[in-house]
Image 1 (cartoon, rainbow, N blue to C red):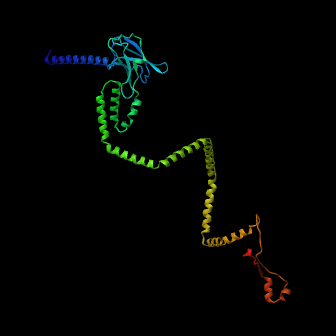
Image 2 (cartoon, rainbow, N blue to C red; image 1 turned 90 degrees about the vertical axis):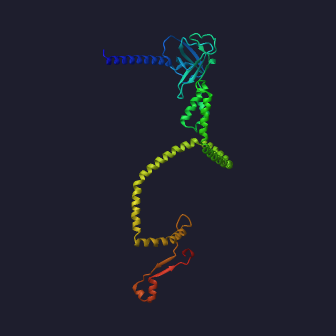
Image 3 (cartoon, helix red, strand yellow; image 1 turned 60 degrees about the vertical axis):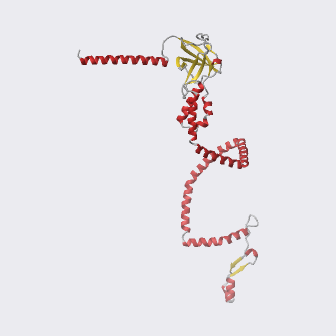
Length: 355
C-alpha cells in the first residue's frame, strides 16, 4: 500500500468516527429534549378548574425537562377538567407534588409543569389523582393583556411581543426575572418618553375638547334626553315603521313601472313641444301670442265677473251692433243720413258691469 492510499484510508477512518459520534450525540440530545427515551411509564390524573387549550400529546415537564406527555383531557363534574398524563417511572411524584398549566409561547401552545413539593413526602401510587387544591390553571392572557392595553397601544409590535413574553414567564414563575421585566419596562418607558411632545399635544387637544363639551353640557344633556325620547318613540312605532318600509318598497316598484310605461308618450310629448315652440318662435306667430297675452288679463277679469253668482254664467248685453233692412221703395223716400242710421247702428249700455 503506497503513501497516498494510506493517507486516504486514515482520512476515511477519521471521517467515519466523526460521523458516528455526531449521530450518537444528536440522537441522545433528541431523546433527552423530546422525551423519546425508552423505559416504562406510570399514569396519573390531575383535576383542574380550567385546562383550556391543553391537548393530548402536550409535554409534561419538571424544571423545564420533558418527563412525559398528556394522554387525555376530559370534562369533570361539568365545571372542571380531568387531565390524564404519564411520566417515567423514575420521576418522583409525591403526595405534595403540584401540577400547573403553563404557556409554551404567545400563540397559545401549552404544557403541564410538575413540581416535586416538599422533600420527604410519600411517593404517589400510579393511577392516583392530584386534587384541585394542588393544581393551577393557565394565566388568563386576555385579562392580563387588557390591563396593559393603554401601554401596548403606544409600542411597536416587536416591543409588545418581548414584554408580553417576559410577563408570562415571570407570572408563571419560570424563566426571566423581575429585574429583566423591569429592564424591559424601563426601555419601553423611555420609548414613550421620546414621544412626550406628541402625547402632550394629544392631552392639550383633549383638554380643549373637554372644555368645549363642559361649556355646552346643558345642550348636550338636552340632546341626549331628546335622542333617548326619540329612540323610545321609534321603538314604540317599530311595527308601523316596518310596515311603512314595505309600503315604500311597493310604491317604489309601482312608480318604476309607471315611469317605464310613461316614458314613450312623454318622449313623444317632448318632441311635439319642441315643434310647438319652434312655430311660436316665428315673428308672425310671436306677434299674435304677445297680443293674446296682453288681452288675457282683461278677458279673465270679465270671465271672473261673469261667474260670480254661482256655478252658472250670467251674460249681459253691453253692446249691440245691427241694422234694419226696409223695402227699396220705402228706403228711397227717406233722407240719406236716415237710411245710414237705419241700415247700421250700435247700441251701448252704460251700466257699471259693462265698464
